[in-house]
Length: 136
Image (cartoon, rainbow, N blue to C red; front, top):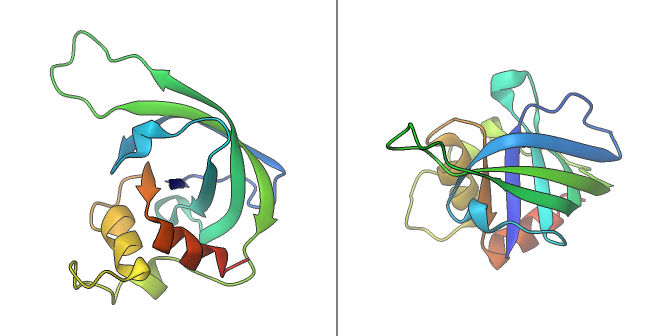
């Protein structure tokens, strides 16, 4: 399984990225060292969407806090960039894909990233990973 992260990205062209205590959804908590990950610079933080593809170099599950009854699992990850995006893919390009049952990669990304617009790490299907590879 491949993964995608939508987060604040300070330098979209950096060779490495580090994200601390990121929320996980849709299988994102399964991320591990060696996994492929697509990095989206969050539009909520002034980013432009897809900026890079990389390999996870470290992954650490953040322990749950005992004082909270309900909380989203969190993970810290480090990523080594393997490619920079050659074409734009962000909220503007994905927002028209709203038929949640159509099976399209664009719809999967819109659903997982923008239906609930918080920054997060998500698992993506093989079909969506192949679609994203076409942007590099």
